Image 1 (cartoon, rainbow, N blue to C red):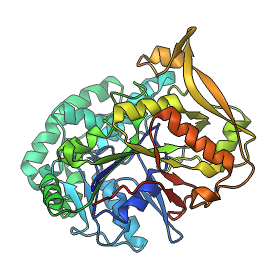
Image 2 (image 1 turned 90 degrees about the horizontal axis):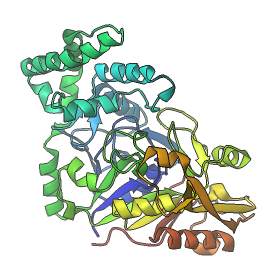
Image 3 (image 1 turned 120 degrees about the horizontal axis):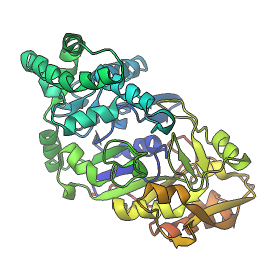
Length: 430
């Protein structure tokens, strides 16, 4: 299994950054395949914390190729600012270490303006977007009026495309009582960074094909959780792209057979940011304890995360629809000290029992969790690097999760430090 795709199996924030860092030590190439700078990964390496939003996690390791695939929507200003930040932390970012797909779509200032205006217009029915223009950029991409990285090399064409884009957006802005935007302003914004962005641009699909033929190990890195997927998530409280592993192929420009193993990053409890259904949410002392001990605040937004018990139904559904071969179970140490732990094994909706989360948002809002209760443990699991170092009750908890989700735990994380990881399966087998 030379090539691995890493995705979140819940609502994001599962700890993908650390796991990708662990795996990237063996990979040669790390590819981001979807999302934008609304997602964030936090990596702690030798005491230094790196907060990445667009850059693939491989950027922190010398000698690795990092690729931003065509499935990502890229804010060029945010990307350059992030490059500047990591350079100030001592990392080297060059055209040899970072490749930006020439056919990736760009996020412009009009997208964030539109995003915030639309969210404000929703009033009490806000979706909880980050306001960074991710959804609007994907909307323009699908509507075939988007601007792509390759357009920066052709100024005359770029100006014409911006004018056509604003023919649409300015009508909506005027309807909301907002000020219309100038095509010249957007054009100047892009031209001010075009040379720097084009330094990293290239034919990503071709380079990945060459790396694969050369026997290089490729890690495909997702940005958000399974249940934020535009098709398979808790619609409409979702992101604007496909976050499932199947998106890795399309978002990187490779065939699906190039992905040998899908790893689902899974938190030992459940969290969610923003609005939307959350059957196992604990708006009580247990939820507060999970949030405080887990430091549950967003990397990108700083927003407090909602916290609740582990939802085995949700994760099993992600495994079935996402093609997940095994999971990396993270933040087990956050559960230390609970007298008892609950695991959701089903839902009750209008008197009927469900073994899955229905697609209807009306049904999702009514879902009441059916729990199994397990004994907790008073001993610490923090920093454990083998099963033998875990309390017996913690081992039983992990084993029962495997049974309920119908997939093995391939890795077990017991702290933010990369070495505090119990590896049960070697994912990079030549």
